[in-house]
Image (cartoon, rainbow, N blue to C red; front, top):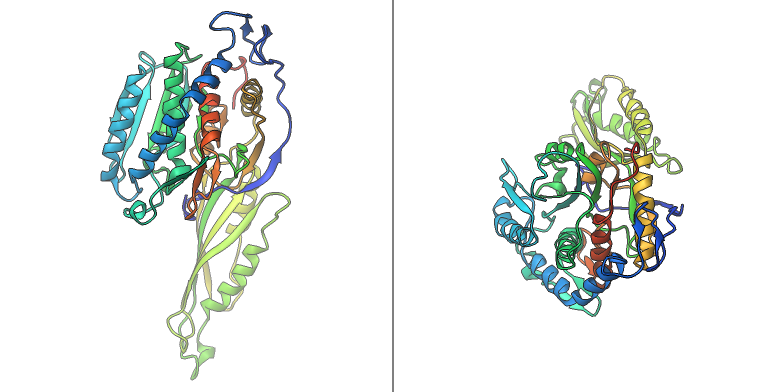
Length: 432
């Protein structure tokens, strides 16, 4: 979640207020919004109620587990720190009946996968999380995690040790209540999401192509806990300007100022922002010149670009690439492009969102959706399977000193994930 990769802390751009189409209510009989028959009475008549009660009864354990994960520092830049955490998670997943595989990384901490026995082939439901944080080693000692009433504050708590806690306890709930997942479960926990998932992305895409649905345990949007039903495409461009050096006092006319051209380019780039359409262009880093008495021979700008749809991304990309130098004697080169595709509100994504809303209502949760300006592994997964993102912890301050998780809401999200994992496949013919 660095500016260079576009996987930054999420911003909310637009709310989705459309209601789901589910009609299931309470513990009565009839037919779910999911299309699953429900029979009054009996231990399996109202799994949502049983899940909700189990999650509530285990609130203290959820809090203690999250605290332990936050205390286990795992910065992206320190691959060696992931071994103890992945070993602990593997043991927890194995304890609820999953098989696990630890895949080492080349330059990262690698990944951990946990999956239902016998599900190496065929349809799955994919749960995506990441263990890496943006906080350097020693941050926990300087700012130790603290629990105050309903809040656990600490580095990496929201993004996303809370989501990992949610996954473990959702699967524990199913195991404790003898509830079978509606589809084989496959959990992938990476160690490189904060830098754009360079090593884990191919595997995520491979699994998404097999997935009937994908749950991404990134933090919910804002303290309200809105679920991310869409994400913008994220691009990174580098603009390099070549000029000609000259003495600024003796012979400035012999030079060609790359700095002068840079100022023009910055103005033109920022002019491509269209807030109403959701396209934003930001020149966030610049470098120019040698010293004040030299006409600048070179300048460079790093540019962050966001777009809500593939069409919009293609259009703004073409506008950026078509820029030409206007200062005499200078030349302009543009490198880069979009590294994360948009997560759009496709038919499959909408269908999954409607189901999640219906399940939420049965858990007494009033869920809202929103579009996020940030990116995650959900951007890539959604190209191949119905995907819901921001399905993780509720709180605020991701990547900030006051990062925190609301513990009662985390218990609710444990129940929500567990209940969603229990449902059958989405309707045939619906896809991403």
